[in-house]
Image (cartoon, rainbow, N blue to C red; front, side, top):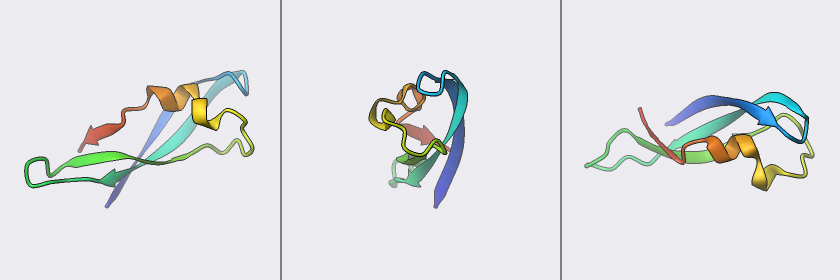
Length: 66
């Protein structure tokens, strides 16, 4: 199962506030059944030269509990 979250922040590439979507993948264990880890990050600004250093992505949690 996946959980999708939308994050908002300032994009220096576009020089404006922007949103990106993150899919969190099920990584549950018997001890932590509701654990999800960061998976696919989707930015609709195609061709962004700064995807690996995205300031919005950097603020997202690597792991969530649902």
